[in-house]
Amino acid sequence: MATDNISGIDVLNVTAWLADRVDVTGTLDFDLVAHGRSNLTFVVNDPSGQKWVLRRPPTGHVLASAHDMGREHRIMSALAPTAVPVPTMVDMCTDDSVNGAPFYVMEFMDGYILKDLADVAEFTPSQRRTQSEALVDTLAALHEIDPDTVGLGDLGKKEDYLARQLRRWKRQIDEGSDRDMPLFHELHARLEAKMPTQQGAGIAHGDYRLDNCMIGHDMGVAAVLDWELCTLGDVLADLGGMLMWWGDPTNDAPTMAEVPTLAEGYLTPDEVVARYDAASSRDLSDLPYYTAFQFWRLGAISEGVRVRFTAGAMGDKDLGDEAQGYEERVDGLLEQSHRILSSL
Image (cartoon, rainbow, N blue to C red; front, side, top):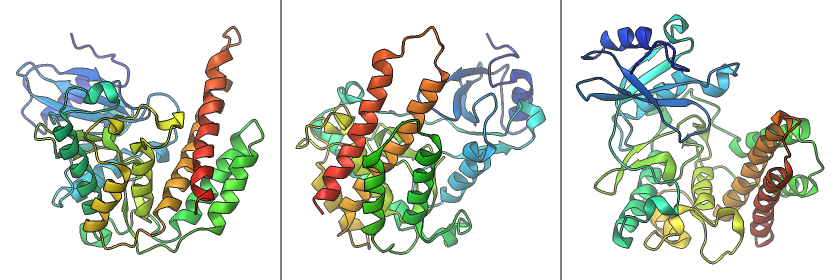
């Protein structure tokens, strides 16, 4: 039963706010979606069976800039008339008195979020191939959009994307890590030295992969989700990131050993590159650099998670294998970056 004290939701206020915008029948129920590590996502139901999705920042003290609801809402609203599928926005609320923080509501879409090998086991190899082809085609379509023509030309700086990213994540390690990371710093120097020239500027999703998209019942991409890290700049970083998460059956490193796209039927990494290349106007000669960069970047992000986990653990809890596992994951990601850079 709905109450007025669900964590992150003032049920009475949000119900009244939504009822002013859509036809709501009765009192709303809010079900927190477990998948996702940052902004909170709720499926909203009314007694008649209507559904919507509500997104808001995490509860507690957070940096507003890191959880900008208006930015997500703006991006998806701007992309609505393009070839990139996004949910239809209902509205955005910037009045904190309604729910304690900004939030937006969008349409509920029925489909599949595929996070691991178990999730894709129900599909045939042919269906998986269709999914992966649609995933590549959608990314290529996003990258061909001129940000200015859809009203996103001022979303962020357009130039020097890689240089800015390299500075940002090095600073995080310099200021936040509690251990020596010589390989991280060696890779940073090599990535700076080998940095390719940016080919124009487009809309970079920032974390594009299978489980950040919804697959529809036709096996196509029904919606691209999780636009928190979206900015303008070098879009080939998106392709490099998708390839990092894709996994490589010829590489036995454990860092990406359980990703769903390793299942039979999904395109191979080479097929992903070939399909994107056929749809893109950009030169992909330097693509391995971008994948190496993304392994390095994910290593920096994961190190930040490790430090926060260690600092936040209670004194009576034995960190033991968990802390060691975090370190091994970070080091494994850096080793993957090193492997790729050494082949260039």
